[in-house]
Length: 203
Image (tube, rainbow, N blue to C red; front, side, top):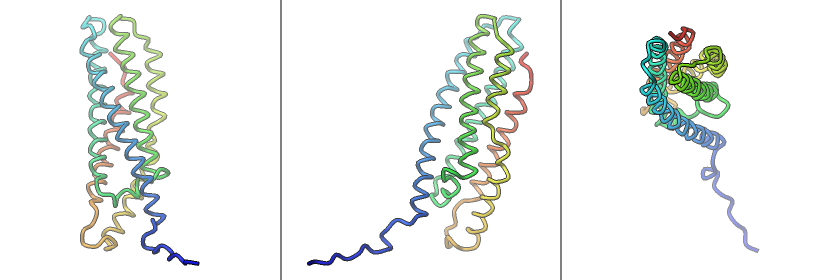
């Protein structure tokens, strides 16, 4: 009878490592969301460009162009945040049930719903027959995905990681928590501005 050596404990994946693999899966999904968001925005840009410049629709088109610019700013803020996740040591903030993960999933759901609503508006402006009540309802419904009540929880997680990093747990080569915090705050500000601007009437 031959006895086999048990695997070295150091070679087994730690539960934290497995958890952070889940974070990488989430980040991969968010990258796909970002790609879809960018492609849909490009389609919306073309739809706005092709809309007629009829005097009766001119004011609404100006507002639509401004909301498109707001969405482009949101796209750029999300892209900057994804760049700040290059260091796997910050992935603990992106595990599937974390506040930041919930916030980002909501942001993309909100963005996708907004693009659909504004694309429908652009199409209806081509026929000069927009249904303003439907547009407003769709925009208000989409706002439910902007989980701004998670801001404080996300900031608390960032602060906790910063304290751990500054305490020397990662050695001299600390993760770039400040860059991630800046990207998160940029996203918060951009999303908040977008929500405020969406309250403005079209035209």
